Amino acid sequence: MSAAAPLPEPGYNFAYLDEGTKRMIRRAILKAIAIPGYQVPFASREMPMPYGWGTGGVQVTAAVLGRSDVLKVIDQGADDTTNAVSIRRFFGRTAGVATTTHTSEATLIQTRHRIPETPLSEGQILVYQVPIPEPLRFLEPRETETRQLHALAEYGLMHVKLYEDIARHGHIATTYAYPVEVAGRYVMDPSPTPKFDNPKMDGCPALQLFGAGREKRIYAVPPHTRVRSLDFEDHPFRIQSFDRPCALCGAEAVYLDEVVLDDRGGRMFVCSDTDHCEGRRAEGHTGEMAE
Amino acid sequence: MALRAGFRDPVHAAQAVFRAAMDALSRPACIQALAPALTPPEPLTAELAGLALALCDADTPIWLDAPLAAVPEVAAYLRFHTGAPLVAAAGEAAFALIADPAACPDFVAFAQGTPDYPDGSATLILAVDHLTDRRGLAFSGPGIRDLAYLEAAPLPADWSARLAANHALFPRGLDILLVAPGRIAGLPRSARLREAAEA
Image 1 (cartoon, rainbow over the protein chains, first blue to last red):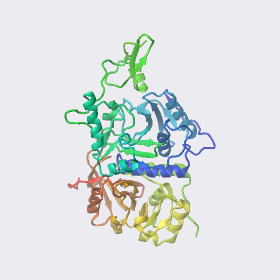
Image 2 (image 1 turned 60 degrees about the vertical axis):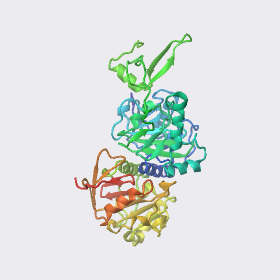
Image 3 (image 1 turned 45 degrees about the vertical axis):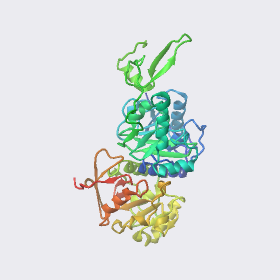
Image 4 (image 1 turned 180 degrees about the vertical axis):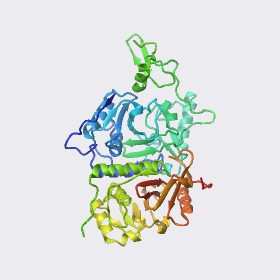
């Protein structure tokens, strides 16, 4: 479903932010693109929503957005959850841009923690909301030190962490925010997306921008850029697999959410990407629990 | 002498120029359309002026090359519309506007960034006469699927050696935007010059 562009509300600049702020964010985005995976500091503003609700992603979207863009917003793959609905309405009201829930119709997709199942195409822009941009932060709390580690490309600490996973659990137990190496240089946090989505970042034809509002960082992965999930020769990177298809559309090899149905252990597994699931059901695919 | 006008619609015109620059840097050596409706004082071209007005303000010192610095109307135009300080020392500039690209100063004259803050480097904007992505030097790297080609003129004789040295500094290094009438192409520091140059 596509919504036609309404008129923006009077009293706001286009897409809420003032032009000086947009210029500052735009310059940070250009540097982020030129240094793939490097976190560019920026003067993050207070937004009319709390930290943790996507203030970084919203600022990046506001700086990039133009009148002719078609915006899609997803929250854990879904177009109809609170965060997605409120951000979509925010830009509908302050920028008057057209919005959509269809991945293929969108020119700009703001996402919280999923990459759509429908492959992205050339010319699309994916904006991630990022809570903690620094992949080394939980290993080294000091910013001065992590900055030095990035400058020296000294990522041994991260490999030790993955190794300790193997020593303790027999496999790499990190399942989301799984660290990646971008274009052979910077190690980057792909935001808390499930590691299932990491392969989609590699060589993606769309431009990927990351905004962390509270932590005041912007970083980027240009199109067609090598994004490698860190691993070991004897413990290669593997994505999650599911032992059953989506209960509604029967899709296999997609990321599934578990939905608890009752208090007697009843549950179902459905696509986390609602647009993908609805599209498949419209094409006549059905799962075991489809009505 | 009257001051020439800036963007008629500053919000959307600046957004359009930024998007062209963003596309140019995220797809190196791939030409994007850029046609700001500006008539700045010569030798400032509409594309140079459009990028300056879209990206520069009081936080971004601008350096002008000799032909631009020689015309007081250019300085007055940029000061009025951007509020950016114009600096005489190339090393202090965040953006360098270059109307005579063949005489572009050596890259070491500009800020290269530091290992812990590589984003502190300058962006060079060169107005060339000729710009095509059908042939020319071959590039690979982030934003390029296999190989991309870019030919521009006039440029310094040691241009390809400069680009190779600039990429060797990665993650430090300059980011370069080449503009010609109606078009823009980017050569960020991540773009790697390949040996076999001709397509």
